[in-house]
Length: 187
Picture 1 (tube, rainbow, N blue to C red):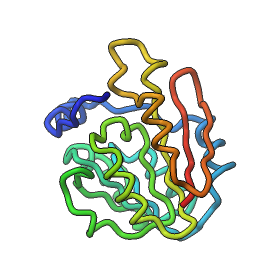
Picture 2 (picture 1 turned 90 degrees about the vertical axis):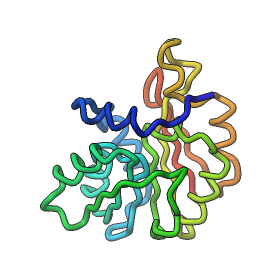
Picture 3 (picture 1 turned 30 degrees about the vertical axis):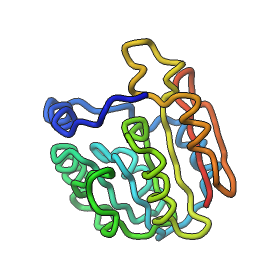
Picture 4 (picture 1 turned 45 degrees about the vertical axis):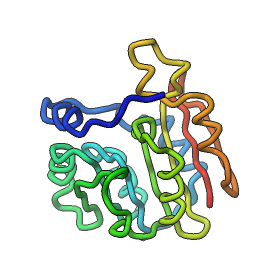
């Protein structure tokens, strides 16, 4: 079980200049092989942090809306993409803010943030409600059982992974390394 998402912790994390794992070549390749290209399609990046994955999606011609609960992270993401009209970022909390403002999209990503969602069943229901038919929900996450004790709360359990994969038309699962798994689930 993961610890509760604490917005003040995330603010402190990003205000201190910290970030998370960049998009590595093996993940880029796995994404390109399993997520069909949809140039011009909208992608929603939930838990976008400083926007690294959102910029990766822009390289694949998606129009991207990056959402994060940290104002500091959103400001950094927006600054890094200031001249890109196809990328927008805003502060938004997936568990406390309204999903009515989230547009329908062909791709919703939750990269390195799904573990921090507390009410995963409700979150998944809301994700499905915003995905267009045939849309993809992309999750890259550590698996808790594979992590050192001090980092277990940053991953999902095997049971949470099993529940994540339920109810999709198709699921593509790929282990990226000793700790991280990528899921591409189609509605």
